[in-house]
Length: 165
Image 1 (cartoon, rainbow, N blue to C red):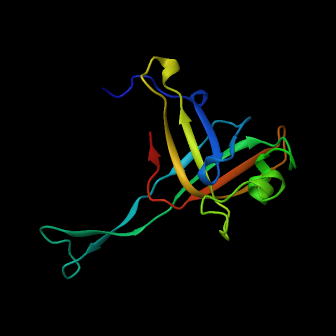
Image 2 (tube, rainbow, N blue to C red):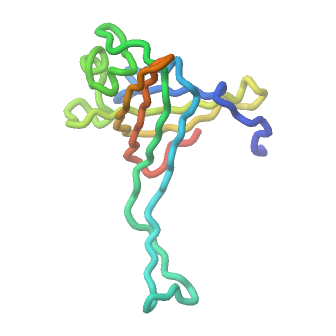
């Protein structure tokens, strides 16, 4: 099958968080549609021959590099004891703190989630929807007051490449 001829827009995307085993999930709502992800892959090491590349360069993969991403959503709540709220993921409080399990397991020191970016395709006549999955994500963020007030979420995914579906 050839690559789709339908250009995707922010209306086609959905961001969802999930915990260990997908027991809990949270779909980000009221977000701007400005997800931005960097996928640096692995470090590429080059070994010179007396400071030169040589006729055939000696190039090898080095260390893995984590992926990073960011998006913004509108501030709607600070915390909630009965349901997940976006701020709960950044502050590790409320319902998320009490009920979610890190993707590293229950005894993990660091709280990580999976971040999934679903891309609509079937509504445009394609055979399937697609998406990118970012495993083991540590979330941080910031709040900016305004009209509306905005939460900027930044994540670091401790995986080399996303899962592509």
